Amino acid sequence: MMDMSSIDARTFRDALGHYASGITIISGMVEGEPVGFTCQSFYSVSTEPPLVSFSVMKSSTSWPKIRPVRNFAVNLLSWDQLEISNTFAKAAVDRWAKVGWTESAHGNPLIEGALFWLDCETYAEHEAGDHTIVIGRVRYLCRPADRNDLSPLIFYKGSYRQLSETRGL
Image (cartoon, rainbow, N blue to C red; front, side, top):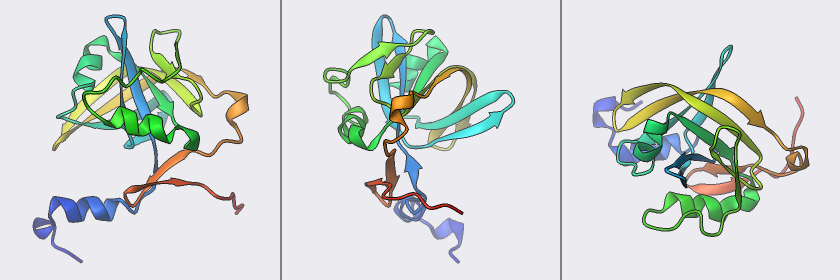
């Protein structure tokens, strides 16, 4: 076991890369324009009330634009949306140029073809090292029936992965 004081950031990141996560796009509408970014650090927090959370780097240029609006959408990407994830992870590109989207009931951009969408209002934020932990209260969710057979976009050990089979218990 390694002493935490001797672990450099790369070693820590590589170790945590062994935990598979889904890929989401966090999106919001700012002054009539869609804003969004790729986020793999997303998870459920509570069912009563329905809360979810994501972590965003403090150096993000997108979250500071969405933050004042106090609401956002979570778009869970499918394997077929790998290029969307790559595009939204880059700075200084028009992320929405080739992405179909609709507006949610609360005005947030919902990416077409996503496995599901959550429409959220900001519930709380917490500073945590070089990230901000954002907790959102889910106001609406949509899981299109025609997406049930699609595989989620997974990130594992520094690469995108696709689920290959389902195993029962």
